[in-house]
Structures are given as structure tokens and as C-alpha cells.
Image (tube, rainbow over all chains, first blue to last red; front, side, top):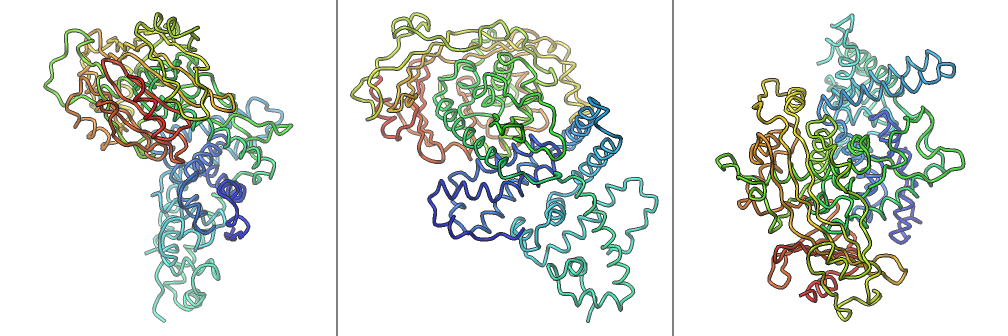
Length: 192
Length: 445
């Protein structure tokens, strides 16, 4: 997942440079958007909006790693905007869950129970993620999407040394939210 | 070695990517740190498993990325065209109110202006896991998906959607523009608001998104409904044979554009003249739904007078005439527009000012935007133009002594001028420089 600077793209004209960045970064941004939103159309829309903001932006003249961090930051913020407001976020998460279930129910022969359970799990994960503070959520998402500490730090504009504590707190908060009916509520007491 | 802090312990789980491994070594010998590390590991493993559940089952294939890039190019082109058109506040007859009110505008109004017909992606079933967008047989290029707020609007018919978005935008803008309480409601709606000048309202992407969400929800939840719009004539503009016919339909003279003032590469005569006649549109306020909306958004004690129920927001949408000039490639390269002014008021139990207070108090609107609008003094005659700062740049200027606004897209390829004079809104926009647009504007007399 580490950004690799492509000298060919940096020597290219603005249009070629933009297209090269688009091709290189589309997949990872799409993955982030989908993880947060749970809807292919919305995820693509977030990525498209992200690249619309990149279009003509001065950051495009910066090294690839900086462009990538900028894109991830904008992508996450754009996705967060869609989840803004707890009620709306919950409603959308519910809709996303319902939509996937409805989709499955439309063809029961082709959609085993496992798929329904999977959709329910996804809904629960996204709901737990939505309850986290944005930076913790971003750190957790980025790390478990395969980004390095340096990439996380660049995306969130913080020191590499701060990533660990953000992750620790984010993962603990996630666990609390995800296991809302945790049978062992004292399980995290060891953490400071 | 002293006990490492929580971040170092967590990072040690990801060594060598994260922190020094000696933190982990320390933890093996330190009971307290050992417990903490074990807990961190359990939490990390749970998060990893859970987040993995949300991942798309496969990354987009190269062909899908190419299709996405093609969709992006389409969207970029449409945005550029929309920016130019919207900035004239004249050229989208399907949604003249939206355009006139919300130059380069709120997401809802822009969506209505830019997409008079439903997008192919609207209402489609969500893709299954492993089927990213664009993964259709044959690799067809799709119209880009529209944001959620736009999709909600899209549940309405295309014309209703456009009109409803325009009307809600009108209410929000006109409502927000008012100064605080103390103003008596005018006797007739014509006295309540009549646009005579503009004021730009800069919205950052977050603010744009917030305003768009509120607009969409007001329509979506039925706080404002506009069934009558379906029959109110909002639709495609009509082509006029010449300026005389356009003037007859619009009810005002249509200016001659001096060929000598046109930039090089622009055809000397208009390619076509489009007319959207003046019309009146109404939007009905539902008090009960408004209360439901407020209570669902954190205002459990919200109260609204019963007399508000059924109040109609009335918008006098002005006639619009746009002269379209072709460029070298035959496509529209310059738009010269003229319109009447926009009137806004209410009929029923609530005055415009009272409805404005309802709108001002809506949860979700950016506080800075509300404050900026409240600060406008001459609310009865000032039309706020919400301009997304990431998409449109602007500067105040003058055209023949009249206050004007000079818009440009971020690339600098598109420019537009917008001004009001003699009870009309004027606009010049296109793939031209600012000076070229100004030259045309000055020639209109």
C-alpha cells in the first residue's frame, strides 16, 4: 500500500498526471469509501467528488505521497459528511442494511442465510464505526485497510508516534461500541 | 526500561511497521504491561476482523477503473457546463428559480439544474459484494451515481424534483436572508421579497453539504410539498424563432448582442434563443411534518402555531431569455441572458418572515451561514447567492455602474458575470476570459 512515486507521471502534463493519479489511487479510495458507507454507488460518488476537488488543485504538483495523503483525507471527510448527524447516519446505516437484505430477499434461492448474516454484521460494524470520533475512526479504518503508520500520520496530519495511541483508543472504543451487550464489561479495564 | 506508553505498546503489535520491538520485549517481563498488551491485541484483532467484513470483496478491476475515469470526465464536463450556466442565473429554464436563487448553487438546486432528467443510477439496487460500480457486462459507461441527497430528490418526478428543490431553495434563501424578528409581515407577498441586488454567500464543501442535506430532507419528509408543480409548466425551455418572438413571450425587450463585442471564435449570431416564460409556483407547508422533522432532529419541545399549517410559499419565477452562441466546435460557448426579478411571499397563516424563522431554526444548517445571512440588512431586496468555494471563485465588480459579480471556475476556463439593473437580472457566461465576458456585458446597454 506504500505510495510509490512514479517519475513518469510527475513528468507528464497536468491531464496525464491527473489521469495517472486517478488510476493509481482509485481503488484504495473506493475501498475506504465502501468500508464507511457500505454502498457501491455512494462509495464511487465519494471518490468522484474527491477527484473533482483534486482537479486543478495545487497539491497535484506535489510528490505522489503527498497527493495520496491529501486524497485520503478528502475522501474520508467527504464520506464523513455523508454520515454527519447521528440520526441521519443511523438512518442511512439502517437503509444500507435493509437495502442489502432486500436485495437478498429478492432472490432467496441465490442468497443463502449466510449472506443475510453477513449484511447484518456489516451493518453492525458500520454502526459501531460511526460512533467513534472521526480521527480514531479514520486511524482504525486506514490501519485495517492496510495503510502504514506513516501513511496514516500523513493522512491525518499528525506525528507517526501518535498513531499508536490513536489506534489503541479507537480499537477500544470500537470494541465497546461493537460489543454493546458485552457479557464481560470489565474486559478492557486493563487499559489505562 | 520504563513502561512504554499505550501508543508504543499498540505500535509494537505492528512492528516493524509500528514502534520499536523493545516495547514488546518489555511487556513480556512486566505483568502490568503484559495485561495491557494482551488487551490491545484482542481489541486490534477484533477491529481487524470487523473492518475486513466491510471491505469490498475485490478491488476494482482495471477496466472498472477506466470506466470510473470516463464517468469522472463526463461529470467534470457537466460540472463545468453547469457552473457556467448557473452563474448566469439565467440559463436553466427547467429550474429558473433554483438557478436564479442559487447561482452555482446548493447541491439540491444544482442537482435539479444539472439533471432535469433522472440519472440512470437513481433507484438502482445496491450492487452486491464484489460488484463495484461499472462492473456491468460489456463495460458500458454509466452516468455517475448521484449523492444521497440528490437521490432522495429523485424519488419525485423529474419536474417536481426540480421545482421542489428550487422552491425549497427559495424558501431557505429568502428565509435566511431576513433579519431577526420584529419585522411585520407584509400585506402581500410581492411586498415581502423582490430581488434587486445580489449578495454572495460563500459556502465551503461542508456547509454546501449541510445546506443540501437540509433542503433534501425538507422535500423528502414532506415538510414542503409541491404537487402543483407537476402541472405548473416547469420544463424544457422553448426555442424562439427570433428576438421579437422571445421578447413577446418573455414580456420584456431582448437585447441585441453587438457582434463586434463577441470574442474571437464565437459565432456572430445566436445559435438559438431560448425562452422560459414567467410563472408562479407554490409550495405548501405541513406543520405536523415540520414538527415531526424538528423532533426527530433533537428538538423534542418544538412548537409551531397551528395557523402555519397549509401556508403556501409563493414564488414568482421570472421569465428568462437566453441567447446561445456557438463556438468553433459548434457547441454552446457563450450565453447571454436576461430575466425579470424574483418575487417571493406567502399566502396563509404564516408570513414569509415567520416561515423564515422556522427555517432559520432548522437543525443542521451551518451556524456561520445562518449568521451571515442574518447580517444582510436589506433582506427584502437582496438575493443571496450561495457559492461553493471549492467550485466557484468570485469577485465583486460593476457593469455600467451596476453592482455585479464576476464568477470563474477553478480552472479559469469559464467565466460569468451577473448583475441586476432596471428590474432585470442580466448574465453573460461561457468559455471566455473575464475581460471578454465584460466586453460583451458592456455592449448590452
